[in-house]
Amino acid sequence: MATRPPVECPVCHEPMTQGKPLERHLLRDHGKRTLASFVVAEAEAIENEDVAE
Image (cartoon, rainbow, N blue to C red; front, side, top):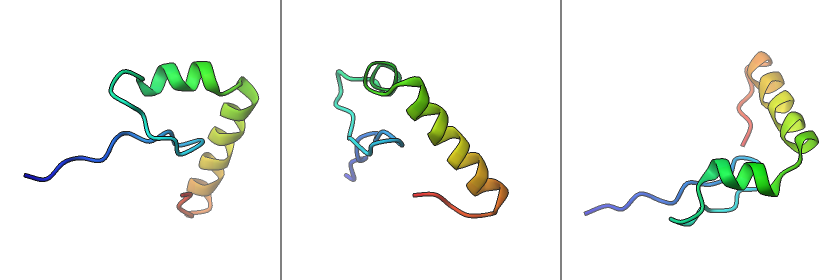
């Protein structure tokens, strides 16, 4: 049976453990400026038809 890889933070690529939900990680470990910069970069990549990794 195949297993699914753990959820990974799209900002820092840290894998989330079972007891550490992504939302909690984003709120506690990333500041507003970092999150805003990530969202802007993703929006620009989509606008330019680029895929950010």
